Structures are given as C-alpha cells and as structure tokens.
Image 1: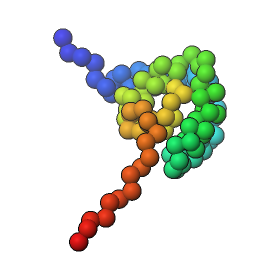
Image 2: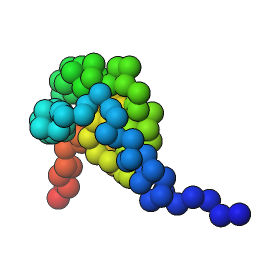
Image 3: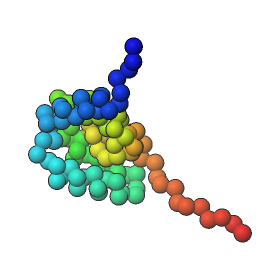
Image 4: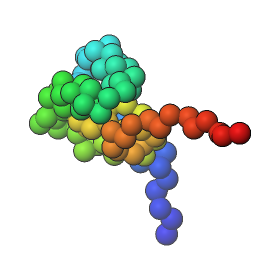
Length: 102
C-alpha cells in the first residue's frame, strides 16, 4: 500500500482554510508576516506573534493550518506559530557572515 503524497495532504488541508478565524484578514496577515520575518531581535519576533496568536486562539482549523504549513514548506505564521521552510521558527538569530582571515 502506498502512502498519500505531501501534495495531496496539503491540498486536502487547504480546503479547510476558508473556515478559519483569519478569514478576511489577508492584508493584515500579510503585514504581520512581513514585519515578523524582517525582525532581527528575538524579543521583537516573540512580541510580533502576539496578535496573530490571538486570532488563532480557539480557531477551528488551527491544526490543519499548522499541518499545511509543515507539508508545504511554508515560511510565515500559521496556526498560531511561526514557520521557516515548513519548520517551527525557533527564534534563532541570523548568523552574520563570517569573514575569512587572510
């Protein structure tokens, strides 16, 4: 027996998105994600998640939303959590490029 592909699972999860608490908040959600993803400080990123987390609290599809984020390799905010490439964003600081010594 073959497993179900990630694409099929993601498509199935996507059908439920219209039932979410975030319905009608596309522009605001986009602004939250852009601001979150551009924040450098750990404290800023944690603070910037408060508003979207409040929207996701008690959402009937938060599990499906999180599943879709993982399956699709999503970078942004989904199901009340932040993702980078489909994995939980652990608030790690971006490492500056190292300069090679001569």
